[in-house]
Amino acid sequence: MQFLQSLIPSRSAIAHLRFVFSLFLMPVYLFAYSQSVAINPLNALLVFLVWHLLAFPASNGYNSYFDKDEESIGLLDKPPVVDISLYYFSLLLEVLGFLLGFIVSWEFACAVLLYGIMSKLYSHPKTRLKKYPIISFLTVFIFQGCFVYYTTYTALSNTSLFSAWTGDRVIAGAICSCLIGASYPLTQIYQHHEDSRRGDITISILLGYKGSFILSGALFASGVLLSFFYWQQRDMLDYFYFFLICSAPPFVFFNWWFYQVGVSTTNANYKNAMRMNFISAGSMLFYFGAIAAMSGHVVV
Image (tube, rainbow, N blue to C red; front, side, top):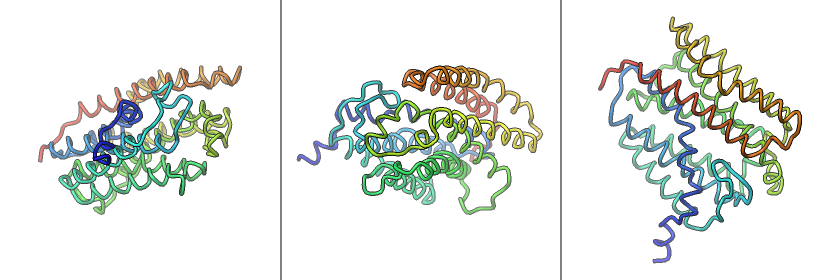
C-alpha cells in the first residue's frame, strides 16, 4: 500500500517534472516532422506524447530528485522540497514511455529506454556524469539533439534507424545538436554556486561566465552555418532567410545579456536566463512550427 501511494505524485513532484520546460525541446520534434516525407499520424501523436509528456518530464524529475536543488532551477524560482513520489513517478513515466514506444516500433522503444538510461547516468550519485563538464555537455549535445532528431525522424517516417543515412539527415541532426548545445551553458550560468556546492563541475563553471557565452555563440553560429548548407542543398534558401529572421530576437537579447554580464556578473542570474530561454525557445518554436505547417506530407 505504501509503495502504491508513492506512485501518486505530490504537488512538489508535479512541479519538478517541469512539463513546460520539456516543451522547449519541441523544435527538434517539429524539425523532424517537417522533413519526413511520409507521416504515420498515429506514430506522430505517440512519438510526441512519449518524448514531451513522458520521457523528458521523467528525466527532469529524476534529475531534480537527486539534485535536491535549494536555489532556482529552470522554471522554478523557488523549487519545492522533493519527496519520494518524484522518484517513483518519474520511473513510472519512463516505463509508460518505453511501453508506448513499442506501438511505434521496437527501435523507437529502445531509443526511449537508452535516453532514460543516459539521464540516470547523468543524475545518479554513483555515476553522476553531471560532475564532468565535457562528458555532461556531450551527453546533452548528442542525446537531446541529434539522437532525438534521428529517432523521431525514422519513427515518423516508419523507417528503420539502420536504413541508409544521407548527408542531409546527418546535417539536420547536427543543426539540432548545435542549437541545443548553444542553450546548455546558459541554463547553468546562474547555478555556479548550487552546482559547486554539490561538487558538480559543469561546462559553465569550467568556462566561466565569458567562456559560457563564447561557447554558446560559437555553437549557435555553427547551427546557422549548417542551416545554410542544409537549405542550400535543397534549393530552399528562403527557409534559411526565414531562420535568420526568427533568430533575430534571441541574437539581440544574447548580445545585450553578454554585455550586461561583462558589466557585472550579478546579471548572470535566473531572471535573465529564463528570459533567454523563453525568447530563444519561442523563436525556434515559431520557426520550426511554421516549416512543419508548410510541409506537405503523404499520410501512410
